[in-house]
Image 1 (cartoon, one colour):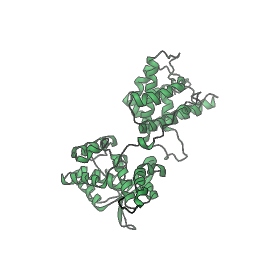
Image 2 (cartoon, one colour):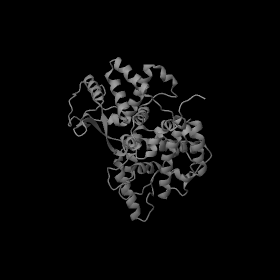
Image 3 (cartoon, rainbow, N blue to C red):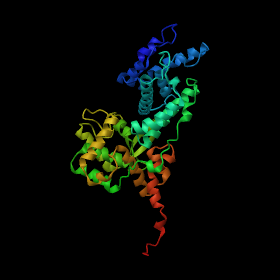
Image 4 (cartoon, rainbow, N blue to C red):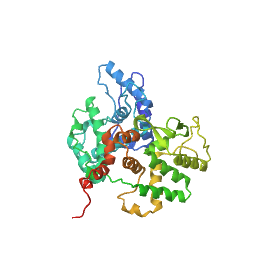
Length: 388
């Protein structure tokens, strides 16, 4: 990526490239390129090329390759406050989903009779509505085997990318309008129900096993509703005591750097301290201690993908009978659903639950609670329980 941009920013040289479909396939499968796509350090260079094109009465993105358009899309500034940008996690997800779509398109071009002249690195312009339909309605559900919820999430990212390309004139056809509806119906919503008794069994299992690491991680997830990414990024310095409420809180940043304070019960704080003692780290609250809240053996921050897999693994290791009744492995995200439903069962209103989970829209929170609310609103609960 860096070499590509440098080659095209030499003084007085046109922005020209010769990239075949195979060149691009190798590029987007290169782990180094994927890492560079996450970093926004090249955005100023590309933006200066956009300005230069405008000054010369050219199209804003003349000479850009598809890969550079993908890079510009995920890193472009959308708010006057430069700190209001996509989180690194979101950028990774965007790059992954768009690269997957682009890889499928390049492979289709390379293996079919659908050939276009020239090897300029601009193959997205050859997309047609049928290719969108084939990818969304055939490849994703049948070849990749994605569930409706996954198809919906990926479709949103790709549709947004294609909409932007059309708006900028890189595409001549509004391909984004050819996506079919991928809204997830309730019958396709994954069942992530965890009861209080089930969560308690999981926590007691690792407490009785005297495993401070597993107990601390699961207890923190269950009692705060934090995302696994937030757990991995949390620092010991972000723990504080609030004298106005008489409680401990963890200052956390969620999606899009949205701030919220997660309540930390005293027994959860003790579990976190036991975890840190095992990792040979201080346990006194210290606003200057930048070490991880949940540290690895090397006293470093966990990678969230690793910790997600780890949580699934330690839950399966318990071999508790109720696990056999679940439709899939329990992931960290199940504990956010548990937190929402347990809060509802304990009298919290929907707005409090939304704020605590850090959801932007109440609709998202309701997605966690619909089944529970339906049961609570069952008309038969108003009956006098007499037998017929």
